[in-house]
Length: 575
Image 1 (tube, rainbow, N blue to C red):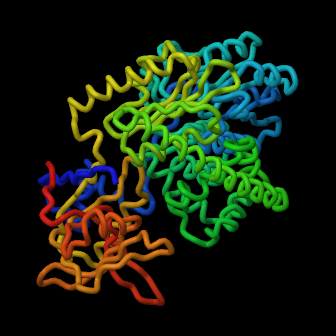
Image 2: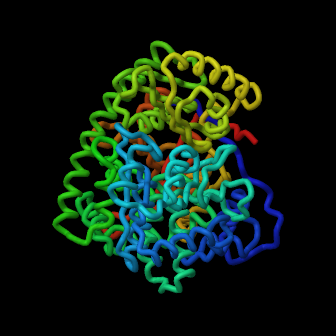
């Protein structure tokens, strides 16, 4: 296991007693920086209201006017997206919304292998000459495509760029909707690409004086992208996600409903976990091993037979993706263990990795080693490697990589992820400089390269009841920016027969016990059996970092502790 330490994040609660929020939940919210009772109630609400006027976003008025002009002139509108879930859903969202009142619209998603990320001149020439494009709207891309957009503008075609990636110093010549522009006053900067496409739809709804039903219909796509693109699940993202998750469960979108049925999720309450680990990877699979347009077609189709064919295809693609990913991950881990085990910034370059899975592999290595990771493989262009990066808290990947952007032929991203292309000969120097920078970060903040578990409170078993757990559930959906809060239970005494491994491969842990003078309780730790029995030596008492849940089985409801980590007793919580 990666070395972990428990960090106490509890801050003294100093406001007036709200009374309407459970004291434990109140403390968690306080620790998260949510301080007033009104903010707490909004965060816990099943019907949150935190959202912002789309016209606060720079460029929104001009973009809506441009769309209105294209419609008046009956021009062909093309939505140009990206091949990941965010780009696919963004493309589907705007086509779905605009096509409900205007027919002359289509989308284009580039081929991951042949065209790569973002706009490319060959595709744009086809759109201009064959589709007779009159307005180009980019989604989840375009903010760094200066030359490509210049080419379109020289043909007298308007361009609207909707993107959430960090802009460069020189912006493309078009109408830009991106809250990360330096002079954009929009108060929330962390929408995903689909979230920004949704804001454009909101702006169009108001500009064209349309019914809001069209906006409600597309919230499922925003939820799908918000989780899959790993943006912070706070503020406006939280509002959009809560409503969008309910929309996903409604079964109204034929393709999504059939996919969920095939994946065993039909009739279930959709969670971010379902999106991140089940639904999202299948939508992504087309772009990784075939073509991403299949995902967009699934989200747009009204024909059940077509939807079923696409679902079967995506499930097949995802199986292939898993096999390719497993093989590539094994190769990368072997390379790290043989050559780069002591590096703080892992730069792995191997030929003939499947380009469609290097981002997933980078994410898995990041989790395994808790270090920033860049995985590169050779591209079709001789002498050039393409790479995908993932990072940990405390290392801003975009800023660190941007320092070397003059060496890249293509680059884009944000603090937690990036994509790039560079000459193969530059890789050793990049590895050296990134590790030098990582060493500096280690000196400044030694805990950066250790896995950190944030402990919100020490708690006793008798304080844990169903009422508390039900109120803790109101903190969902959990994810990046709204991480699940963990609690510490000290000196958990395990009953003589209360320790066992379980699961088909006996890799999960079940403990039963309590603390002196208190009732007993069960605790479950996924993937923790080997650590407990072998690394710790199966001690009779431990300290637990956990989140409490209610287990329902055959009509019985029991409280169980879901273990995130466990240590020898008397763990010191670091402030």
